[in-house]
Each structure stands twice: as structure tokens, then as C-alpha cells.
Length: 117
Image (cartoon, rainbow, N blue to C red; front, side, top):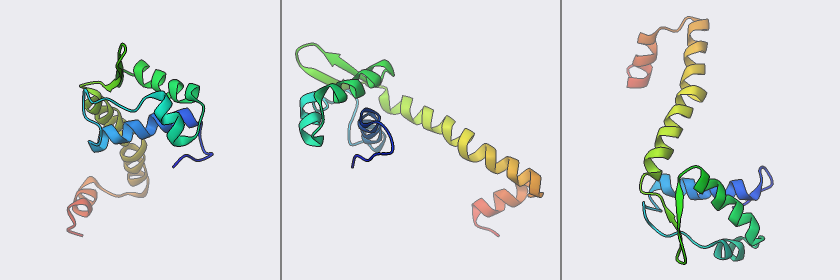
């Protein structure tokens, strides 16, 4: 699953985010420890800890002292909101700009989306 395209800690953080979005990890559910991630991916535990620190900073996971790390209750909502914003900024806005430049009307776009073209 890990590749050379981005730092390993970011890939681990992204994997946890995807699991939350898919519902594989629920709010208040415990996640694997840094040592478990390190053993599973054969990486340094400090790398996994860096991923966890990033997720804590983003408010997506929290620590229960002496027990472990858990998914924040509102993590899925936060992630969905972020992804929606990114979807509109990265996909819809450029598509609409292109449509304007080539003379495609909103009606044509709506018909296309509805499958009535």
C-alpha cells in the first residue's frame, strides 16, 4: 500500500482518513498503536507517530492517556466537509470555467448530468 510518491507518514495519515470516510473506522473507535503500524508497514515507530501527531493536530484523532489513540467523534463530518470543499475547488470550478470558455450552458451541463443528452 505504501509507495514512493509522498512521505510515509502522510500516506499513513491518508489511509486513516480514508478508513474514517469509508466508515471502516467510527468515531471514538480505537486505532492501532504506533508500534502496531510500525510493525505492519515495517517502518520506524517515529514515522507512525508523526502521522498520528498530524491527525491530532487536525482534530481527527485524540489520545486517551494510557489506553491509545481514538477517532474523534466528528472526524467523518470534518473530513467530508473538507473533501466537499476540495471537490468544488478542484473539480467543479475548473469544469465550469472550461464550460464558459467553450460555450457550454448550465442547461446543457444539467441535462448531461441528468443523463438526458
